[in-house]
Structures are given as C-alpha cells and as structure tokens.
Image (spheres, rainbow, N blue to C red):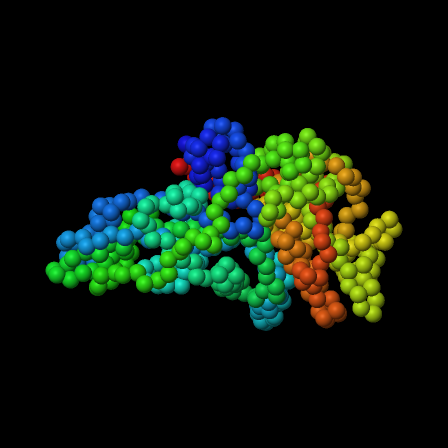
Length: 461
C-alpha cells in the first residue's frame, strides 16, 4: 500500500488520488495530471471518515456502559453524527533561553554558583487545539496523532449525508495563541531557564473535522446519551438526559475548500514540474522562475552561486537610521563586535543582510545554528541570475522567513545593551522586501537532514 495521507478526487480522471498532507503540488497516479493543491497562507480543511455506522455506534455504547457497570441500551431513540473542528498547527519552535545560575559542589566541599550559557533551542511542533468553544459534546482534544490516519479533502458533498458540522467560532489567531501557550508551558517544564524570546516559524494551519456519534437511548423509561469517538470506535462520555445540540452549525459560506488547479506556467502555459512541498517552480520552457503565492504564482529574481549544490536563503537588507545610519557590513561590525566575523576588505562596504533559511531540516537545532553562522559571516559569494542546480527544496515563504530573520536578530542583539533601545527595535514592518538566493553548501550534514525532512510522517493506508 502507498504511504500517503491526503485523498482527493483528481479533476482529470475523477479517481481518488493520494498525496502527502500539506503538499503544494501533486501528480495523479492514474492520469499523470499535475495539480496545485495549496498556497502558503491558505487554511485547508480535511475530515476523517467515521469507521462505524449507527449499529457500530450502538455496540460501542454498550461496551462503554458494560465497563461502567451500567445497564445496556434499550431502544435507540436517535443516533446523530457530528463533526467537530480542530485547528492543527505544525512548524518549528525556536527559543533563546537566558543563562541560569546553578550551584555545584567544588572539590573542597564548598558550594559555588555556576552560570550556564545562553541556549538556542529548536524543535518541531505539531499541536491541535479546538476550533469551537461549545463543550456540549464533551470532547476537548483530538485524541489521536493527526498523521496516524488518512485525511480526506473536505467538502459537503464528500462528508456523510446528514452529518452536523459544528461551526468554528474560535479564530485562527486566538487558537495560535493557545498553541503558543502550550509550547511555552512545555518549555518551562523541560528547561530550567525562561526563554528570552520565542518564535513559531513556518507554521502551517489546517482544520480537521473529527466525527463523533451522539447516541440517545431509552434506559428504564429514561432518555440518556453516550458520545462515541467514530474513529476509535469507543464511547468516551455520557449524559443522564437526551442530547439536543444547541450550539452553532457551520453553513459553509466562508469555507475555503481545497481547490485543484492545473500546475502551469502563467506566461507560456507549459506544465511545471511536480514537487510536493516546494514553493519554487522554474519554467524550463520560457526560463521564468516563480514561487507560489496566495493568488497563484509570483515571478521572482533567481540569484545563485556556481557550485553544483546550493542552499536557498531569503535575505533582507537591514538598515537603522538614528544619529548614525547603519547599513553596511562595516557599520554593523562596529555594533556587533563579537558577533560579526573579522572584516574582509572586499565585503566591508556590502549591504548588511539578515539571512533566513528557505528550506527545512529534521534537525532544527542544526538548522538554526547554521542560520546564525550565515548571518554572522555575511557571505560574499559571486551570484548570477540563473536557475540553481541541486539542493534542498525551497519550502519557506517570505513572511515566514521574516519571522525567522527577526528572531535571529534578537538573538545576536540580546547581549548588547545599546541594541535594546527603541532605535534598534525590529519588527516585520521594519524589514525591507527580501530576495531569494542560493548559496554554496557549507555543511553537508545539514543537506542530509534537509533531504530527510517530510511535512508528515507517512503511513500505510
């Protein structure tokens, strides 16, 4: 069986086609049609198919009641299928931790204070939080790892007839805040020092609809209800009265469904290559490079170094204007005396850039440390306008790269009191537009880690 997670109906041949969840483009395994599935900031919707029908739900209720030592179901009054929405956040969490003072026993038995170093930590995160506020169906978490089951592209035509779609009444921004709070809580548990600054980088947001049966039955003349997880096929909660849903129901009017469009060059119409998670697609027919955007394709300038293997980065010119203008490598060398590498004559007048990796890797710690190194050394490679050769997939868009660049600036500026003043505060509005460049690889271990990266853990269907 194939190792894929999302199933959609191909617009070319109509057959159910499998692809990794989170893929931007995919080739149909039956008719070879290449389609564009996603966009950088689009919130896609998926659903799980229930593994049991009403009779199976009743069996799950009886097992639940038996385990509780309660009488089994009599007559079934009604069985209703509900779909509960959950936000799923995936990406990389970066934290810069302050030094922590600990006490150690010296050789002479004296207890002495020892200050730890600053720590830069990174890890992948995959968090689900409810997209609804109602507690009527008594389900507060997804209960399974989202990558453990195949997902289906959401549409009302594909979901089971008669199912009630619970409305998402929690905004993505509010849900993202809850996800970040969960991450900070975990950081405080597993680390002895608090983070100075944190960032969620490259987060992708999706909505997963989870199926739940509400089975109302007659027990000795009284109506009662048990709620059944329609994926795990088990009851998980009950009420002592018949259940009547009073919450909001989704109308689907503001829903963004998966839109399957032909993956073609907007200039000449030639088919573009399929690459599941890439945002970069050069047209080999008319020699125009594009990156995926929210509304289609955006033509970009493509600057690459000569070596056979190059790595994609976003770079952003950094400029502060106060009593003195800070713009060049020489200017920032006077500010970051222990951070920026010893000046070479040929690059001291170059613009100073913040560099942010445009690729991902399985080792987030190695990834972020390499990004810091690039920022400190300010590369001086000769770049030409041409398509890159071999290298990692460009899968981080400009907005996400800005978040990384700002985080890295705060990391290197943290030790300089002068840079903590208002004149050197940096946010996304303070960064100029970025450009994509491909630099020679300095760490082949990172290339291996990038090649191993997948948006999801694949499974057998």
